[in-house]
Length: 101
Image 1 (cartoon, rainbow, N blue to C red):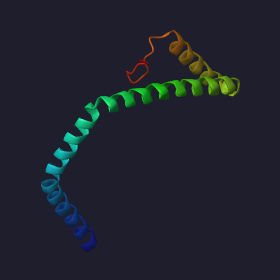
Image 2: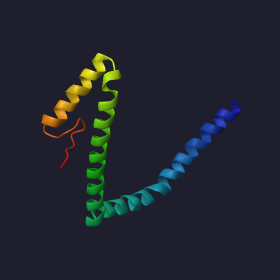
Image 3: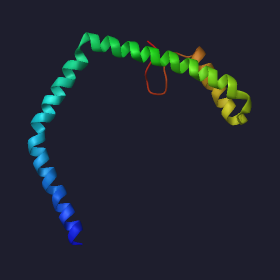
Image 4: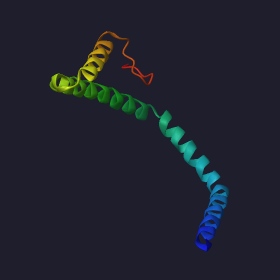
């Protein structure tokens, strides 16, 4: 019991000291992150990487579904077919609200 009480006291002390000293540093990191995120070069690189990731994921999705489609249970195969049709004929958005643009 003594060790548990010592551990909890250490956590509380660390939390209190960390919040007092850490707020200023947190604000500095937040400001730096915002500046980096607003940099046009970073934004272009992130958009390019996202587009390439979508393209590679699409190729992998089709390659795997073509090879594994016959060996899956009917319920899973039906779901894959419906997803494929939705992605081919749909508006290009996914379940997370992003698009291929």
